Length: 207
Length: 292
Ligand code: SF4
Ligand code: SF4
Image (cartoon, rainbow over all chains, first blue to last red; front, side, top):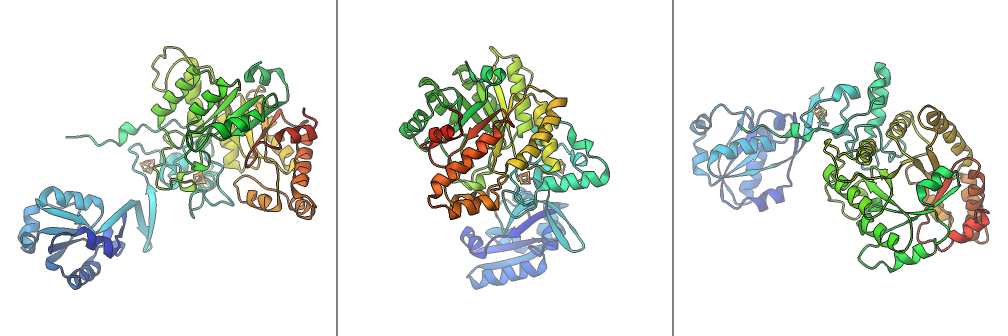
């Protein structure tokens, strides 16, 4: 699941130059995080109207980043053609896909943060840095690329104080990696030298 | 005798840290360096330490070398990708800078450009491996260099290591370092525990690796309390009390530090002095420790 959060309403308002706006929510990740599902879309609609915008309609797509055809979306939502701009309440993936077809200005209502997941209704952030070369198994399923603030692949930086990362409130990922590998009896995984990442693999193959 | 020969000779090494200026005016840096003339075997030049922007260490080292100092250039993984690291190192070598000290580097969020993009394309172990390649005359992609580097290479370590930290230290040693420089030592007994572990690793890897203990001269109760917040540093409570109760805390701090140095002399291969501020007292301190 893509982790995103709503922009400050004031920032959204500053961004939106046009008056006639159509709002698109996302029924997948953004809905799960209560950032772009139906209740949030309706709240956004109200706030924008209070701020003097004209909302030509709204919808919540089953997922904004994966639509069958733009023609379908248009036929079900005639309000889109009446709008000067679209406000999309999804991750950047959804905003990009819709921008590619809409032929008009598209604005993001959310800020996209990381790739995570959800379990037992709890959202877990920063689980994968999308490096294109997955070696998470070497680290007991805890990815240092994203969970270590410095993406260190060969062990901790020595900056942690009482288990807390030097950088922010997070616990040092390397303590967790060590503990997990110990539990699994796989400490030899981190005794080897891990080579630098091949960032060529991150690059998307162009069609 | 250059630094690597001194390391090999078994002499007790004295190094001292200098920060490049924040700006183009080198006078203060040169004043600091002058205080170390004939005292330090080499001066360490920091690389945007604590993620605060300063003159590049390659420029500062080059200026200092021009004045007759041998330098140890710090190089962190924070600000440069593998291309930049290599071109910096090749350039340093061509300028006659023969020693480098490798570290991950404090995160930008700790410094004066908090919004900077951190790089960390390589970690310190990988950077050490890369320098080994440059010393063999090839770059990280295996291309042959026109003229290889010949660095004497150091890495840093905390003296209180958890098990994950110890694994990393082993990897650094495996990458062929010539010396290890430790975080500041205050608790000599704990340090001796560290030395035992380090000796075990040294005996299985390379006995040639020299260990240089970090020294931060204590100045006041406040400075001691502040140091206790720095990762990897712990000033014992009785030491803090000693300073607090002293008539002249600065003199007491020097006395305590000189005692630490005297004890370390038999335990490790050298000391590295990191004064907070300048090197005004460094000569005096070394005299008090009977080192000069
Ligand atoms: S190794 Fe790469 S792909 Fe795998 S979890 Fe980490 S960042 Fe994601
Ligand atoms: S403290 Fe731990 S998580 Fe934070 S940067 Fe250092 S190694 Fe990574």
